[in-house]
Every structure is written in structure tokens, then in C-alpha cells.
Amino acid sequence: MTELDAGLVRRKLAVIVRNLAELAPVEGFSLAEYRRDRLRQKGVERLLQETVEAAVDLNLHLLRIRGEAAAVATDYFTSFTELGRQGVIPAALAEQLAPSAGLRNRLVHQYDEIDDAVVLRAVGEARRLFTAYVAAIERLVTAEGR
Image (tube, helix red, strand yellow):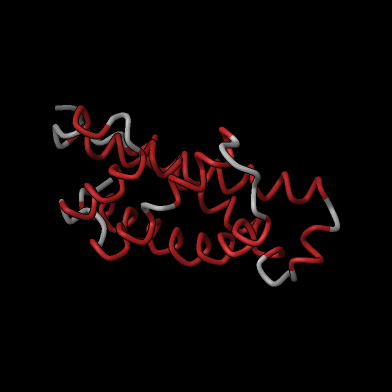
């Protein structure tokens, strides 16, 4: 069992917060507006990917310090649900966040053609859900006196 690495936690949370702020202007776009700029589309996809990856890194660290990481180390989806099961984040939030792992996989591995409407909807969902995630992790770090 390892100790909570507050520096790692803060760095990963900073990535998530920064990315959510950078996604804010896109949240109100229509699909047509979003599709007008391919560079913006790719930037949005990358910001969403980085956000999920930073959260998963945190999830795995938090599970590792609880001695649980080996069971979920290769499954991004389960890293969220397991944190919810353990009460680290609210279970309902964990269930809502877990599908973001699938979006991340589609963006990274391009299993199918990327659906711009799905990505655009994910921006608002990410801003809402990951803001709650950051707050939950901040509460944990504060409670541990870090």
C-alpha cells in the first residue's frame, strides 16, 4: 500500500480544471458552428481525452493506495465505478462518469467514425460531471490533511 501523493493529485486536478475551462466556449455551440473549424474539433477531442486520462490516473492512484489497483488497472470504466463503490466519489457520479472511458477509447483508437454530435454533447456533460469529480477529490485530499 502506498501513501497519497498530494502533488500528483493536485497536478491531475489542475489538468482537469484547465481543460474544463478551455472547453467552456464550445459548450454553447451548435453542431454547425462546431463543425466549421476542424482544428477546434480536434482540440476539443484532445481536451476531452486528456480530461478522462487525468481522472483515470487519479482513480488508479486512489485505488492503489487502498490496495485495489491491481483489480482495475486495465479498465478505465471500472476505475470510476470502483471509486464510487468505495465511497471515494458518490456512486451516482461514478456511474455517470464511467462511460467517459468509452468516449476516450473511441477518440484515441478511432474504432468508429467520430460522431461530432456525441463529442459536442460530451463537452457539457464533462464540464458538469468532472467539476463534481474535482470537488469530490478535493474534499478527499482536504480530509486527509493534504
